[in-house]
Length: 400
Image 1 (tube, helix red, strand yellow):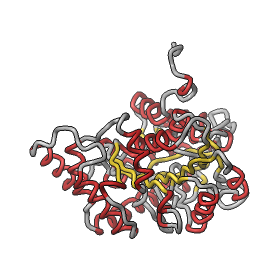
Image 2 (cartoon, rainbow, N blue to C red):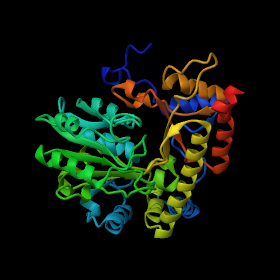
Image 3 (cartoon, rainbow, N blue to C red):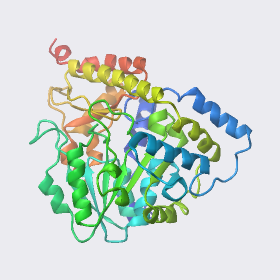
Image 4 (cartoon, rainbow, N blue to C red):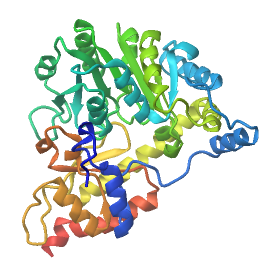
């Protein structure tokens, strides 16, 4: 059936997000799997999109992004982090952060180059690496209950991954799926390795405005890293407009040249009226971001508290809108422990809640089989409805 599939894509199949959303729709399950909000984005941003359409902004945009958006993004990085970028030569607008990641890896790596990354990882990372002909070199974040603090990493193991073929460190902070926010000390350690081995850091920071504990520190702000970092982010997560697919990459001119060299042959340009509307979003006042964080903290605390009460083992995520929860206290219908995250995920579909089995985010899937990922980017009533269905898992319910 798949005889004509390129070897580069063999083994990837359909993304887990598509598969779990399909199952949720078919089975009537509440979708806490895929990370999209079940509420709409701000009216002022939508109004700006309508106005742009009516104003006739319907033709191709400039390949690197419309000038007003590139300028707005330059203002954003200066305002938020004190980073100075030239909008025309150092910022590239892409069709979502996923395209930015893909274009960057295609532009920066050759066949046989090595890319260091942490598992678990957003699933497009490994596919993007393989499609560039590069080789992933993977360090594992420690799961809760293991050796060392939850979601920390073994520095000696990471150091050993860097070598003469290392071209890129692919970093994600705040981190999907764990909710980890990398500390300044961790970033400085990784920056030191990048400088020592002349490695470029591709830093996926799409959850930059969803931090509840600690602070988001862009890798480009670490000493020596501005010149060797590609910072990637997007509109979708911050403004609840994931379907708009407005992303960007900020990097010095030599790295930007590589990104654009690939981007021009992938999507060439991103939807013009939505770029105009994105200007209004990026220029939102500080109160918008404060309210965003407050709203998501409430959602996090609601879901984490209820999951813990029901019997899941979990820590509140420091960032993102995902919570990873261990299910070791629960048993199947025969009273036996669940074999792995896949088995438990299938059981939850029967219960009426869709989640993500994180073993698909690992090169070494055995490290991700003891927990599942919940998305809390949902309305309060959606979260409470999901919790009501999960009550059947309660140890108290099983014993009664």
